[in-house]
Length: 418
Image (cartoon, rainbow, N blue to C red; front, side, top):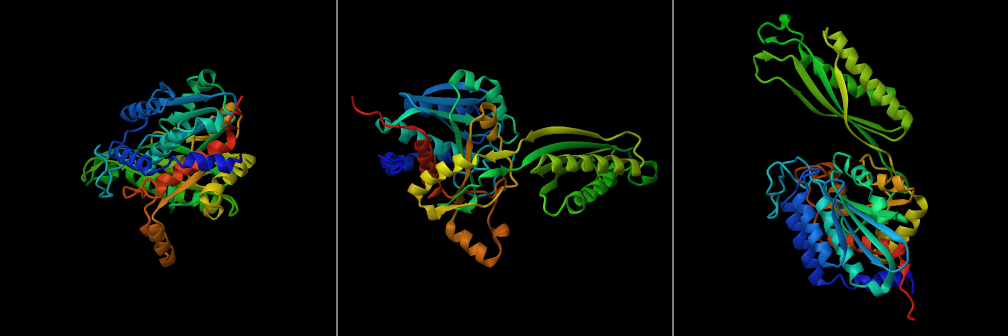
């Protein structure tokens, strides 16, 4: 029996009953998002469902992570990963199942990831006579702050559950639902998130001559930082420098004594990363000196993400299996993403290949209309937007299908009758 035949037999279990259950689960998860390392309700629901499916479940791995294991005879071990933390975003989608937790939202689609993995787990558990090996379902906390994967690895993930033969996963994105995108090789950028504190001297707003204004200092720094990529990075290289937050002062008639910036930096090579970080530090210190600051600025790292590299052979094998069931015409390669992901840590820490793909979550008609009008960036909400809302159909079923087919491509064949 071919891998395609096995996958199709498993996917026969993706019936209306399971689909409706997964949609209800997705809506429940979306309505109850939890921030990084606070995913207690989510972890409990994942654990309950995994145990019901017959998986051996361990909670609290890497603080709030969950590992569900299904051993089905001799064969390879396949790690299927889903992250499950949310973001500090106030939802504005207007959905009937919008977030009930004020200021917290699944604005990056991790609720989709959890739902799809539980769906694939159900199909694999329901057809154990069709494959052999071990399914290791890893529900990871704190992806949004780049700490969850490392926390699970540091909590002896592989010593406790064994080393997998491959790491597989997916991320919902604002591309047409029903499509799968994957880029072999360097797939996701490295990230450095920095906090910059700039110090001035406070005074009354009517007497600026008595102050060293950190607001002006910070504003000049923001503008000068815009030249790092445009004037210091070669046109053939890629980098992003974004100032995502600037905070200073409490009242209009007070010049404060401090300003804080938060920077997000994306790079694709160690050389460019070093150049960008060096330029940022030079500019911050230079602007402070130019403003006459009497105290040096403080630059600290909030979190980092390593480069995420997809193994080319693993991608070829995995995508062939996914294409056999979703249609090879539904597969695409969008190139390297400027987003970042810590899923690669699961692969590098075990020295095993990773294949991580993008799952379409946008209404295809709306996407095509916006693309034709040249308004895609305006009309199609992207990840981390308060309007980000993947359509359930066919996003969820396509995600379950892709994960299931990918797992079957790496698991062993059904054991032969004695």
